Image (cartoon, rainbow, N blue to C red):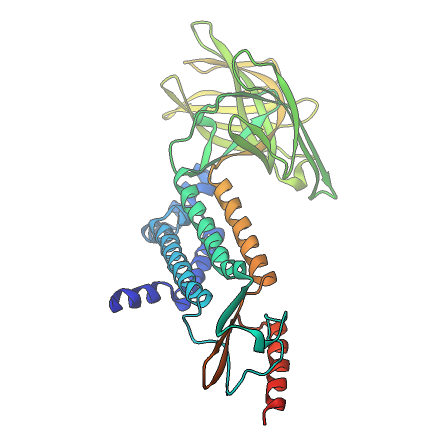
Length: 433
């Protein structure tokens, strides 16, 4: 039994909590500063591994390339959760004993003879001499629950974070004006996926992207005008999304992530007569948004069992052009400049350059655990206010044939009770023979 109590005290140690919180803070700093796989495009990730092979290998080995999805980060969270739960249980045990006066009293005074006829703290109504042989008075019992509720709220927040890492999902997507998104997985750059991404279950279209840059570098205004349909047979709805005001759709929350650029709008035609739009996005710096220079981009596009290497230069303006070089293996499939309406035969399919359109970066998130985290914050706030505003006080009086004893149990720094007790104690001492 003693070993079990010692283990409980060790798990609930404040020093252990400080160490775990410090390690978690360090992990958050590392995850925010080191290059993370979830935040790197495939080209950037390949460049990192080619330029810094040893550094990249050690990052992968130590789990520093995906800090928030690593096993050691999860282990730190679980250890902190166990520490908080153990501390909460130990705190409840101590407060249970405090409520029933089973611990050493914080204030104690005894004397010989009759109890002086002065009102006692917490027993102001009536005189002490009129009290029965043994009596007790308790006030503010709810205040004992303040600190345990505070700790429980932190435990709920940590549990919500752990649950979020298992079931939460977030991904980056780039959507150009006029482009439709209905859940295509190949358009997503997954940043966090505790499980298989759920079905999107809706149809989303970016109707208009509104971007205003001030002084050539400050993002003054960013709006996305969407039209969407929640399901088959449902009416088409419209909404305007701005920064920090996400669009709730199909169980997702869709944020603007402040990335932008221009897209080359193409139409792809197959030999069987099928055709459809085709977008290639070029990122643009804010300082270059109003007057973008020629934009270059290289990518590997795999369509219909055909892999083609695209090397493109896009010129945006009133007369947009696309200089396109397409290679398959070591042979050049196409090399030329396209203007709106011009096409190129790439063998497996044909493309027609239609023009340019701005695109915006979006963040799709789905995280049911956030409600648990929010509930944890409410518990933390409620526990803090309860601990701050409601003070527990217990006074017990015992009289016998030889004298009397008054005991009190209060929480530390209870200035009101300290004043009352000091005044009563002075009255008792001044009346003593």
